[in-house]
Length: 259
Image 1 (cartoon, rainbow, N blue to C red):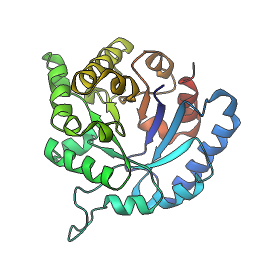
Image 2 (cartoon, rainbow, N blue to C red):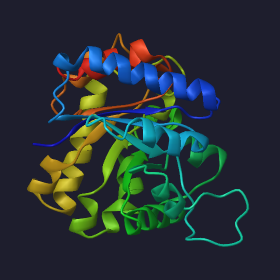
Image 3 (cartoon, helix red, strand yellow):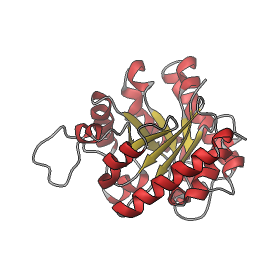
Image 4 (cartoon, rainbow, N blue to C red):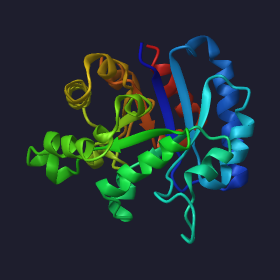
């Protein structure tokens, strides 16, 4: 049975002290609602800013539910790349996951499929687990090209990996038009795309891998709409933005995946 995951992408929010308080609060509230969370089937990932990775890993070391992830990494192993963070550096903090290809990285930092493919490769080489993001912008959705766009994003990147490597990847579908806008894809739209992605995985690999691949929804998922979104058979959890910055809302979303 494939893993269900709720991942919190904090983006560029929280200073060091604020981040520690939020993590401690999330841990406390998860423990209080432990009876509502099946830790064998559901995982929680926190992706704070880089400055918090090591401390977050320490705080969650004894917690069987929570893993720590980075929001990005360099496509280079090491060297004269001022300001960059390597996969090896991330690994050394105790983190387990890395978000690759978030729409904001594609838009603001012009990351293309070639770059993202290299990032996934170096993440895997360092025994980290990629959360690979894909999704269409509003104009692509309105013109009916959303399936075509997502298919190309996957074919040019993670579908080039061998089965053994692909099985380590979590896929996150982000309808870009729904990120930070307050607009959410309907449960039907989310299920339609998630099912399409799973069928693509089946066609490129096999049925078993398709059924085992975790596919997350990312796009203004919150405590109010999580139950509806997560009730879809091909939606295995969420990549949560703003709602992950509030412990009560984030833990409520985690509990929603069990309903």
